[in-house]
Image (tube, rainbow, N blue to C red; front, top):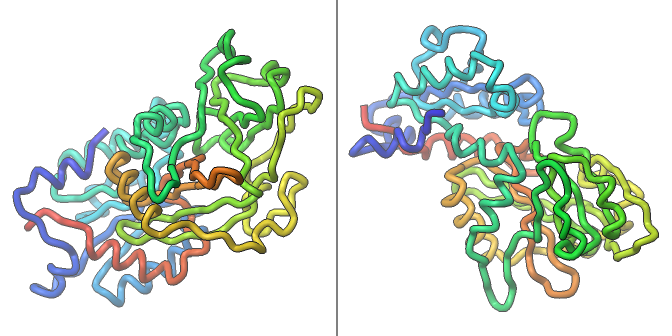
Length: 334
């Protein structure tokens, strides 16, 4: 797949949409490849309306039509995860790649090769395992111990995995399985594991999930309910659940801890910015969300999930944040 960031580096000089508008009155042209569902989640109409007042023309682009007739574009903003997950049978993605190759002056947010890393949880886990552990004032940031199960559970998994554990399908986007998970309370539950999946150490975190939303240099956080503290129990049966039912702002699942958010815990700002900077460099992404839980005993942070271009629910003044981000994107000089 074409890499929009690599295209940008090939230009010896670049400017931003904000600078172009200030110097020559040129408006920034942004083509948006977003499903109707994504537009609704973002409240796209309000973003486009606000952007238009600041020199940014946003338009919905359709892959079912020729991109040449819909352009030209300075930026192509997309959430093509659905299409990417069905790339083998979807010619529209190949048409998109061909257009990007033919137009190096157009910046793609974000590069398909980078987004692809987050479509498969096993690939994301491998990348996170290679990341250097961050430490700040005695607090470490790490990734939970994870075992990738392709066909069958490894024979030594009873000894190598700590329980309780959480099982997630390898597909992180665009399938019904992406949000269907289960909790294993002991090695006895391994018989319930259905590959391909990842089995991840469950971190007791007092039922609080910290969601970090990244939009370029802009970082926003939101507290969400999460799964209550669990303990190893060889008699406890496997619990199947949908992650959407335990981590939405209004979730009231039997797996949640009542009143967990009333304590209003916060993340250290300096360490959070260091974490985001590290992930931006490693992932080569501008738009993503990070789910962090804090170990109830050690205080260490664990990155339990990373999502491409989330809905940004809870980000205050999203239209202006997104507009300023687009205006600041480096563009090849015309």
